[in-house]
Image (cartoon, rainbow, N blue to C red; front, side, top):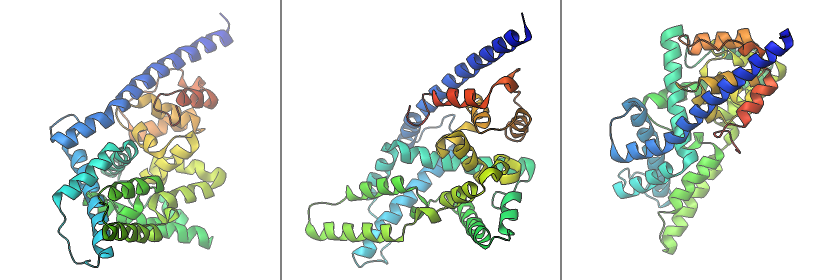
Length: 322
């Protein structure tokens, strides 16, 4: 058999292995939301860590309390801090029932867990990475200002994650809308109540600017790096938050899915995402050495082209739009 034929066979075998692993990963992802909904409703112990479940409950309860606080402010009683448990529960039920909302808070909890793991094992600061430090010192005033804003936002993210909180104005735009829809569901047909709800929602929307959220700032910085964004595909250089955003942007994935790709059981997804992002085999090995030092990449993976990797990833059942 010629060398070319042998290489073709090797790539075909590798693709088959990765497809099988990816299908297994898809199946795992498909069970996450139903299991989380069940556990959040029934408070049972499981393979999902108590820490992650507590974080999800904390973040969703915090969003619910912020929404009800806005209602009180609109009603002229901003000092009232006691909320009816039935209203809090109704809002949280709405968040849990929204696939995108539940997936997002789960991804935030996993991101923070990964950041803490990288800090413990590699002494990687969860707030400021070498790349962000360099961007803060950039001679370009706009880049430096955006980087300083991100640094402050990252510090707030660390603080709120430790408190298991999620600021309302840090939600992605579609999920803020979902939260407001859930709030609207609490309103009855009384005109005064409807007026208060409308005023509360308007106040929230007027304060909201997605480009100033932590994820918005990261996305703008990574995109603004142009060809230099490859530097953000090194987790030890860019830090966990920028690495995840850069991986999502470069591989065409949703960021929450990119977070899941770094999790246990998603080896094929991470391999394909890194290759689809254009990383060379030695750079992919470096990322696995940082994220999953216990794993060994499959023999022949260096023969898999970035286009093939992107095509395999796009055919994943968990891929956005599939």
